[in-house]
Structure formats: C-alpha cells, structure tokens
Image (cartoon, rainbow, N blue to C red; front, top):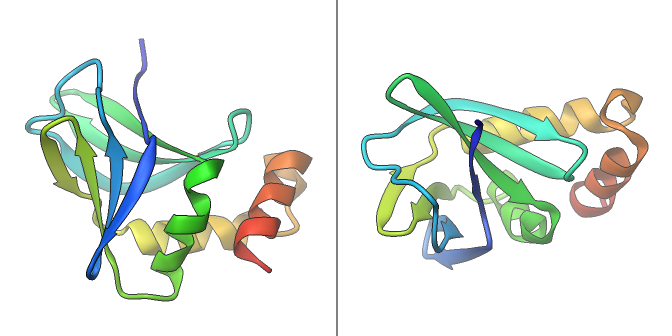
Length: 124
C-alpha cells in the first residue's frame, strides 16, 4: 500500500515555508528527501517524494495549498515538511515545482482540469 502524507495547510515563517500534516498515520522519522516531484492529475496535487527505509512516501500538496507554495517560485524560501512531530527539509522543492509547471503549461498529457488549475494559480 502506498504511504501518503496529505498536506492540510502551509505556514510561512521568515524565509521558510512549512507544509503541514497534523496527524500522519505513520512516522517519518529517518526519512530523506528524494529531490523529486510528480503530479497527481486525478487529485490535482503536486507530490514530493521522500524515502523511508526501502519505501517511498508521497507528500501530496493539494490545490488549496497552491497559492501559498507559489511563493517559492519568486522568493528564496526553504521548504519544510512537518508531519506530526517530525520535520524534514524538502530539498530541491522550488526547482522541481518550476520544472513541473513549465511542463504542464499547454500540455494535455496532464489532463484538462490539471492544466487549467495550474494555469489559473501559477501562470496568471
């Protein structure tokens, strides 16, 4: 079964943007960032990959959080994950997000709804 952490809110503190999941169903202690992001078009979410032991954990950032994460494209913010009491820097987040947005713009492979949502949030 795929392990997923769903981000419920964001918090900005100085030059840090925190992606927060209050109650994960498992511990992220010892997890490491993979510096890689995917897109979940069905759920309209960006997904940052972390690795814990021999398995991947998907950090899902749904559309309601996009307005806040957009700031990482224009400001030098460090992005952090807080899942319960565990914290982890999401290295390469800004670069991965910028790459995906460039790929999604005008690309029907991600689905019409995902393309439209990305355009409305990030490209206006």
